Length: 374
Image 1 (tube, helix red, strand yellow):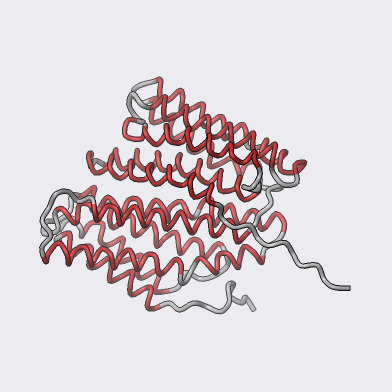
Image 2: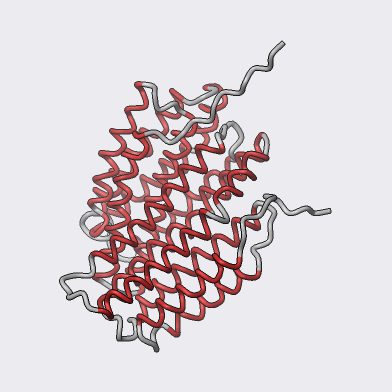
């Protein structure tokens, strides 16, 4: 009797890619807002806004991992795209008079996510129970943001922090039992959002304003492009495939927990790091012969440090060692946060690019995913 072949793993659909376009806009809005108001407070607000956008995006990454995008009901995702567009449009004023619009868009996105997950998810009995366990934290966090948009003073940042903390605590408080995982699809989905974030950094190179292209600008742009190539290289040549293999090797609820930790949580600093680095990239091109403003230096080098720290965390979570080259590059990036305020911006970019490219060259694709403990 012939063995029955396992059904093929689902791939990322055009509908999901269309949904991601809104998040490209949202990321651009965050970098633009920080660039126009370079303060430590705006950097923190940008991080909180990103965490809200990421939670919405990640929720739908899990949704499309469980709901076939060929189903007609999946077109509800388009409605979520429209609601998310409202949220993205309100990013620059999310902490001002646009806070209610930002929060209501997010609330609608999370309501649609819950309904579609409960109605159309695989294994409805277990999936429905799993998503309903998250209703208090997902919807509760969105309602807190609505209230935050209505109040002023100290209450607003307190409510924002509470909303983010509650939403991110949800999957740990309730567990992830009942959520099935298609490893190839989830890995591809997160790989694409990393590319989107890197693409937004490339856009930052081209949005440096009406400045003449001379040898200095061209050289700075090439250095920054080298940094972005290095960031791409260390993830897609040394990381993405091993993360997917580790997730595939896990089973049952352990697989769902690994997916939660590696993708939903540890990819947060990875992608946020690229978004922050884009802020520094923009300024490094505009003022390449000047030291960076302290906020821009923190965003530029700190963003690269977040990215590298996330790689180290991901490797630890899947049972590997971060590796000395990764840790060395991380130390260099951290050191450049204060040094970036003292040296020319082009020099900061060169040091960061050299550190990341050295990491990419030092590492080789490893044949095994998990290091033997024996």
